Image 1 (spheres, rainbow, N blue to C red):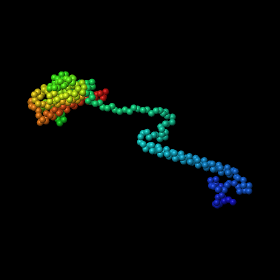
Image 2 (tube, one colour):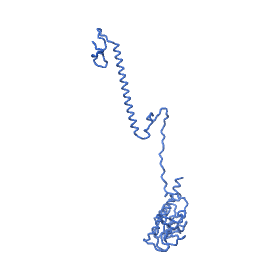
Image 3 (tube, rainbow, N blue to C red):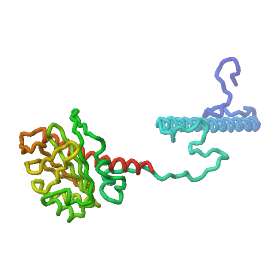
Image 4 (tube, helix red, strand yellow):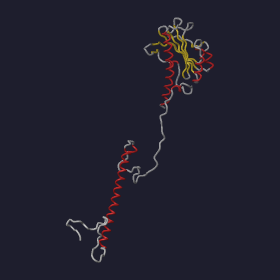
Length: 296
């Protein structure tokens, strides 16, 4: 007894349903329908193959999705190394392209700027022309605030002792002073003489600075070209300093022979202005030579 297309229970054998009716005749000989069995086996194998292929496809899609996620995550980095072209292998090995070692370059950095003081600290580097008119050019000096000092006489000698007095001649000689430059400036009856001693090394100039007593080791005042004698017998202000291979000195006083006191602020200011100017001129000498060396 069987139910066909009339809508009743279906007794056809389903190879995937347990305990379903086997596809052989219910005749008396009970002989199995081998053709039906073979067809059922083939159908079963086909369905298995479809399941395996489908599973593989799903796995492929899953792996592809994982790779896509990895690529997207990598591309979140804005570095050029992760911005690979679409369709190119992740490792950069394009088929047919020649691969080789990545060229390496030595790290470079800009050289440090040249130190101007280095160029005026030794005779071997300080080779620019030197003279009183070169170090103190022009006919007057205008400082910050508009104060103008008129330039007087200049002097340039290799006899350092002749341009100094007190204990300074001996100090300069003992430390091998090779040259002494002088210049004077004046304003409103106040005069200043600047003296610059030249040495072969900065160490010599520094040593001189440490040995000088400004109360008795002084530069001789220089008169001439509109500046009267000053500081020959009166009380004057004396200073000393050094920069590089140069030791420099000032003496400041009144051209009318008046003694200088602590209340003479204009005279103190003149001394400071000329001392600062001398320092800046020596430093500028180093800057010019450092700049020329950097551009070679």
